[in-house]
Image 1: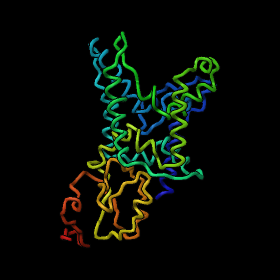
Image 2: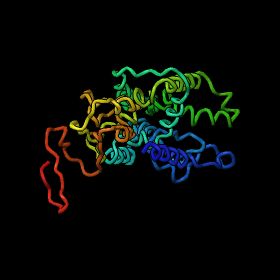
Image 3: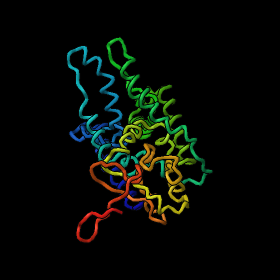
Image 4: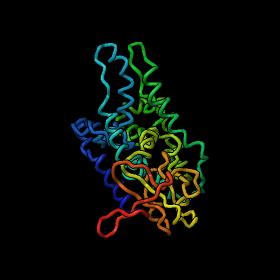
Length: 307
């Protein structure tokens, strides 16, 4: 399962950044594929990117919403919201583990031979703070004299934008290098800090900052894809918690197995020696075990039996 997940990460990272004509055709691809929102953190401004970042698209919608509304051209941004809702409804936060390029970069950094530390658990609420403040409120409420907001998260925080967009564009354009000032240095410092932290902690950006993960994580409890914990099979070996990249602890009841922090990497499914973790995909039903109900088992004749 882990090998399949890694192949999936490589595939989506290559496909999402497959515009290799940028040295000759222009620094940023603007074709039809750019209207597709990849449900992962992959910067729109990356020279090789052929898809859009849903987080940037959402901020752009909110930053121009009040201007468009005042001009009589209010646009609900249903495409971006629909993409996020559809992805979350089917998979929850699974794209974070299976296709997000910046998640892959963090996993590579963790391989460096440096001391490893755990994340303070209250910091897992950080993504919701960044989502509410930098993605929603500031772009919507802080406007310039013309009535436009700013994409605050992209402009002041996002390390993926600096790594995939800012640095390559500066390397390609001497004029941009001369114009780079304090804002770029600010973003570069954030990038270095995040990458350094990623070398010592598993996916710290995903766990403490990423607003896209916060959005998709809200769907974990109700998405069609569900993880299930069978407590009667648990050996209390803690293998699931030890291997979890986001420190979800469901074997002892601290977290729900479908916690918003879970990125659904499926490591717990393969690591559990007792087979206490399983998964299902289909229309959402109440989790029988979580709510104290008994599972139904089906016999060889197809009749439902009470287990």
